[in-house]
Amino acid sequence: MLAHALVGWMYCGAFISVGRQFLSMQATLVVHAIGAPFAFIVISLLYFKKFAFTSPLQTALIFVGFAVVMDVFVVAMFIEKSFDMFRSFLGTWLPLSIIFLATYLTGTISRSREISKIKEGTMKTFLLVMAVVFCMCSVVCPVLSEEKKPEVKDGVITFPESALPTVSLSKLSFSFPPDCPKEMLNVKGKILRGEMVKEALGRVVGRSVAYLIPLSYKSDTKEISFYLAWERGTGGKPGQGRIQGVLDLENGSTMKFPGASNIAMEYRLYFLKDSKIRLNASGGATGDFTPVGNLPE
Image 1 (cartoon, rainbow, N blue to C red):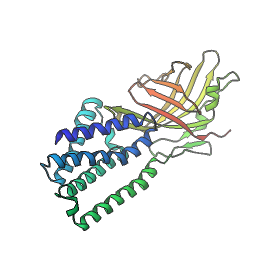
Image 2 (image 1 turned 120 degrees about the vertical axis):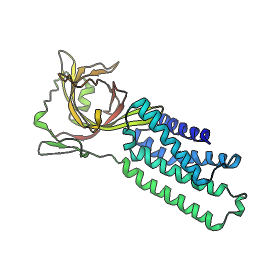
Image 3 (image 1 turned 90 degrees about the vertical axis):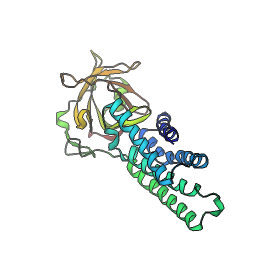
Image 4 (image 1 turned 135 degrees about the horizontal axis):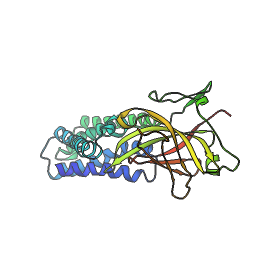
């Protein structure tokens, strides 16, 4: 029983790890929420065919309970020492709910000695429930993954995430000299949005929406600077500040908060194609930032 649950739990972790190599984090979580239950359907079928020591309801509770226990004590408490992963409905609670339902229904049907003896009402109920579940996923998941955009009005940037403070453009200093590298010019005047995601054992244990705004480039020192705002940092609180560092296109630019002794976090900034930027935090989180808005000229 626990071996089956462990295989399912490990599959979910591997699913996210592999998915991130080909999709964005948000898209990976959407596909995971829909695809993970299929693995548990197969695992449940194997379990009920060869063992069936427990009822469908007991099996569903044990499978989901095992996953929660592993996430709490192995990932959250032991590895990350943070429970941020449980704040994500799309990444944690939606998949667990569908896995529970899929395991229970699979067990209910497979417990019958012959598929042909299953009552017509039971089969119709099963098909109806599964249809409702997947319809809900097809509607809810795209809504949850919909990209939000900031608004610039009267010289003030307002982010769609309520936790983030507004930013007055008058407090930001911009400087892009004629010899500014094309990588900086490509993102000049843009607002970039990304999600800083932290993983452990192939599972998402922390997520925070963040924004980048290019500020300046210094010709003599090759120093670049960006405004960075994040929804949830250390302690689960939002924050903002200016990060700067020497431009390094080959190895990534090491970015720090100047004069902020209370912020030990460092970042490695990479310029990607299509005006995208990748930010790797020293704490283990990483995120790709995409332009979602423009500053007034």
